[in-house]
Image 1 (cartoon, rainbow, N blue to C red):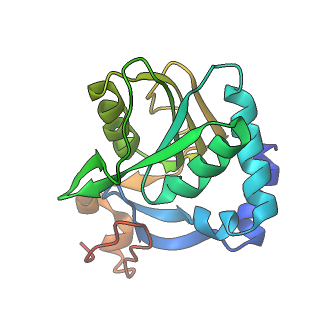
Image 2 (cartoon, helix red, strand yellow; image 1 turned 135 degrees about the vertical axis):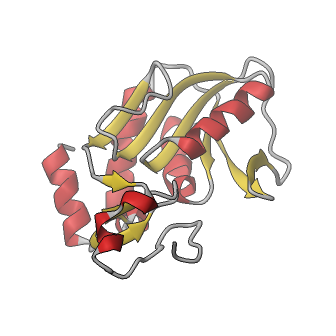
Length: 193
């Protein structure tokens, strides 16, 4: 799937939003990728994940792990297409952790899958969890990389769509200065800054 084709899918499903958004990273942006609106359609989910799975299929992956909540759907489908176990890390008291009986064995080959990265913070936390269990990171796959490749989390990193989307620290946000209402559509939506 080409980048223009994926952008068309985001647009046609209403998943490419324009406005004033607080991202999961805490940064502000005028553009938001609401992957859930694309991934709710099985045909888009399957095709997007097929491209990601194809990129990593020769890496002898044992397990796919994703950060909750955005990465779970993508990670599960990539894992299904690769025929491997899928797990997720989730926040407890503000920190990512493995729960629900999930575990990683030393030497287990792990692929980290996320829907969208901006700063890569959630994925970096998941990578640290994997390493703390003795797992081996074989790659990181994402649907959208908002940093246009500026955020490197693994040697084998692949994004289906990589583009630079402006993000701002809240104190420097021109949208805030223009008094444009702030929305927090992400999974860690919180009170507006």
